[in-house]
Image (cartoon, rainbow, N blue to C red):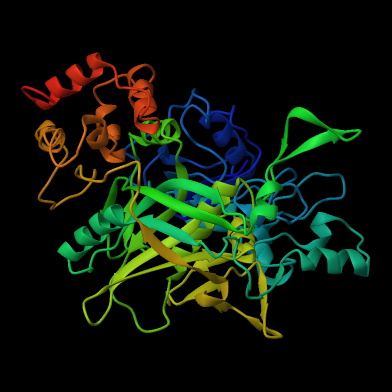
Length: 509
């Protein structure tokens, strides 16, 4: 799996770890290529490095998965790469720490011993005023490197054939092509009207001048085109014409629809100086959110963000393109097709709210996974890393217009049949309503009026997440969610009494 580390001097990448690894293993991988690195702030969940990782707990236990981003701050003068043997995998494709940049190497004496070649050294002034001679990772790139940030070809191996050289070079060349087909059928994405309205209403509070994002929870739904197609799903493995039990074959359905039933807004700070317009913060409720979603038969199916009005044709910024690609990779657990969708919300010149849906192409996912795309000064374009080459319309290009990476997804709205979206949303500042027991009382007190039942009003995704702060996620919440998903299973009177007491309800409910 790949774990990305964003530092004060750039982004690194560690690949030789697994879910059972610990942050100490990540540090060991970093030390292999940066043996002298000094950490000013250790590995943390947040950019400010105020929430450090537990060094002896596994990555899985800390919800760090493939593609996750963690943070640290280092002494820049100590972070030069180790240019001797073992400083990378020697194949130039970016395996190891910090991708291809780790392949820098000093000259070799022929016996496998790295020399401290003065050409690859530079003097730096350390914080205490002392002067130190350190490896210069850019020295090799100036004249002899195969590509910028990589070691010279002779440092990889002494002899190359023309075909080997071409094959090597092709790994770093992307021929940019627009993806014509999306991975979602004509049903597109359908967003619950109430949830969407609450999200855009909060953005309207700031006249859409603040950017914000949330995660979409729902289902990927197979929508067969006709009855014959429906009968083909699912299929089972057969042996001599006989279907084998428990052997369903899962096929990717081109005509999947994304059904969004709820929106969750994680902790974030508005930051006009950030490329995305916001900074995502560590979420202490992440585990509970995923648990509640799973108990309700939901999963993360997309993300939604709001932004100020933009010029015509400017759909998504480069930072948003990269974030969409990272989330698609996370959903697919690979660079692969996925129905995961991006929804954006803004306001038009006439004051009406506009909502559109997109996916980024597989090529965009590949380039983001290889760190070939970077965010530059012009948000309308993705910039190509100096290590890579992009060929667009037969010519080399250092920038790629964002729209080349986008496929449009049809978007609709629906009224969910299972859930409500009345409870205040978490992690909002300057909101007139905040999550509290009083708000819970206000919502649940409607029970018995206008056709509402207690379980109807309790079927609120954000309310259930709030309840996990007070009820056991292992024993109590599953029983409540079971009654919400299947209304034929009545909610136990004991839970009604507990929840009503928490809310301060009196009398019948």
